Image (cartoon, rainbow, N blue to C red):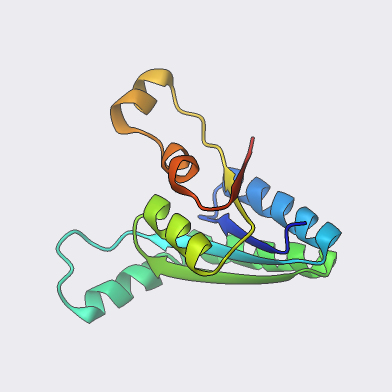
Length: 139
């Protein structure tokens, strides 16, 4: 069924729920999981060091969440890789899903008010509109 599963992971509770669902599905299908964290580069980043610093700064609370995720996957016996990459979440996740030929993209749902959603849009909506594979949104 779903052998190659990509998860949008930022360490938040919704992304932890998404990772748990992905690990469960991967276990059932003897698949593997890639948990991808999209890190926004500083607006005026011009030097390679500034981009590297943005990646390092993303470690803080995310590091604890990744440790938790690795333990979850290990308990389930699922191969799960964690990766951080500079980019906008919607663009990055849809591109990686297509390039790496993932079968499923799993996302946690944050739940915004209708007004806020209308004003700023939704990463989830963008992914659903542009993904080349199935998308599972975990509440």
